[in-house]
Image 1 (cartoon, helix red, strand yellow):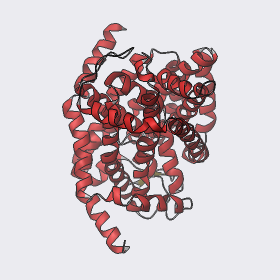
Image 2 (cartoon, one colour):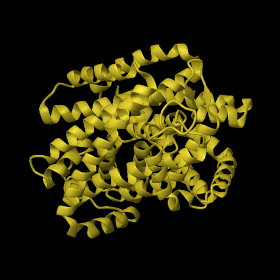
Image 3 (tube, helix red, strand yellow):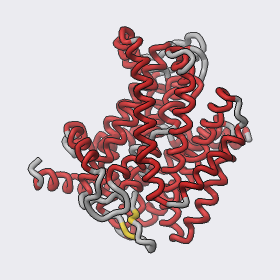
Image 4 (spheres, one colour):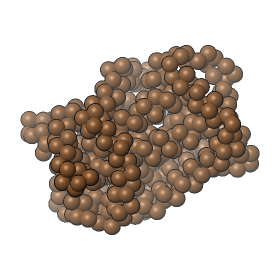
Amino acid sequence: MEALSDFVGQINSIAWGPWMLALILGTGFFLMIGLKLMPLHRLGYGFRMLWSGRKSAGEGDITPFNALMTSLSATIGTGNIAGVATAIFLGGPGALFWMWCTALVGMATKYAEAVLAVRFREVDEQNNHIGGPMFYIKNGLGSKWLWLGGTFAVFGALAGFGIGNTVQANSVADALNAKFSIPHIYTGITMAILAALVLIGGIRRIAEVAGKLVPFMAITYVLAGLIVILLNIGEVPAAIAFIVKSAFNPVAATGGFAGAAVWAAIRFGVARGVFSNEAGLGSAPIAHAAAETDSPVRQGTVAMLGTFIDTIIVCSITGLVIVITGAWTGGENGAALSAAAFEAALPGVGGYIVTLGLALFAFTTLLGWSFYGEKCVEFLFGVRSITPFRILWIIAVPIGATAELKFTWLVADTLNALMALPNLIALLLLSPVVFKLTKDYFAGNGQ
């Protein structure tokens, strides 16, 4: 196992090297400039489209609102609680700053992904609307690029078992074991049964569950975090200043914190930022392709909110609580660090908030990613592969719950990078389509 871990670690160091971080941030920056900062100054418009998107407005399988909720169900997960904490543990408080940077340019990336997903989507044999990077590569770039779409589908299907399945089950099992002494295998079996009951209904059932659970869990967690911040409001300016300073300066070892170089803050901030909001991975557009909409751009403005909500709001809440309470110097890592921070600020209830929040976040992530993986497998092998995939997905849950967390995160991290590469190449090559559709839409709507 140690040899395998070392091998994956070597691949990870290459996959998340400077070139990948530059490609992710560079693609987002390029799209943001090409869109003339539209995702930033049209943020309010996106929220209006989200509100009106509670009802269908064209062909598709789920409402635009539920498409975002399905996307958020997959993105708001352990990355918002355990991922943020891990980034700070390994890269120092400055990692949170680089997560913010990733999110701001990531809004343009997520917007472009959704625009292309709706523009180049197809209808399968079961009359379901399907799309995502593999389809905008196939239909947007032509048959000579089909290999790139297939590459994305392979990595996407495999990555789902990491980021969307085993990591989620593992984090929940660890949290429930630490707080309630529940054996890992019991948590894994329970999650598997509940997931199976939802997955039987396909995307419509997943969207219905996500449309109810995601707003509830996100609002509850954010309110709890805001209470902590308000109770320590006087320390917020200093905490933010320290986060920014740490993004550009090494942080010395203190307490249980081992110290971190600037490169560590950048690497883990960007990597965990992408892990959390998934901008550039190509996962979210698979959900947005199923939206009942007649406008790729309108759905794109809804999609970009996913990155804003996930990282700028939810991840920031977790990060600020960890820094303000000083829990980041205690030596804890992952979900345990977030739980320690909330418990320090809200004794007796803080730990429960994080534990139960993590359980709900992870469960909905497991549902959303099952759909992503399913569509990747369908692209490769057809609709007959869906049922076998769902069976394997359910089996993997209890296996992930009992696996080693460090190795599970390492594999998930590596697969994320391999999955993002084909998608980022496609976004750059198809960027003129995104720019033209956007310009024509806002000119035609007099916006």
